Length: 153
Image (cartoon, rainbow, N blue to C red):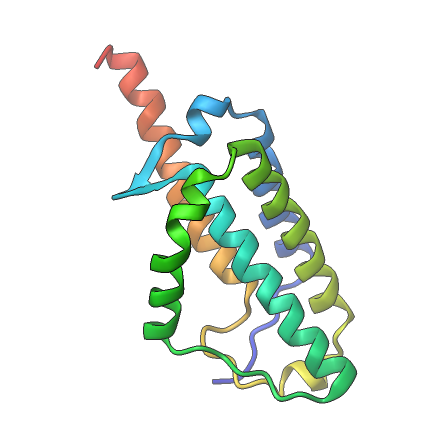
């Protein structure tokens, strides 16, 4: 699959959506999203994977190391192994890590020339799209939480 590169405007939208979570209460950051996952755990997950992407891309750019993308099964195993530590992380720390990793990934992606990006064997298109998928999940969970608060449930 060829690389799909987000434009600067799309990256700003994703970063703004992530930054908007700074206005959410700690209680809301601990709200369940999917099964055992919480909003904060999803943020810690994003921080981990985006930091990994930065490391892989930097090693490729600086040293010519071919990016080694994990299979979906390997990624699921990593997520399962890391989930307890992500759940234990204080919510504001998870958010701060997610913001820092997003900024770092966006900077690396913006600096990579298009011809280099086109050479990458993307498994899931551009890495920042993963951020959008989880922000969608988080925003739906927080909207459901607000709705529950309005109905008194």
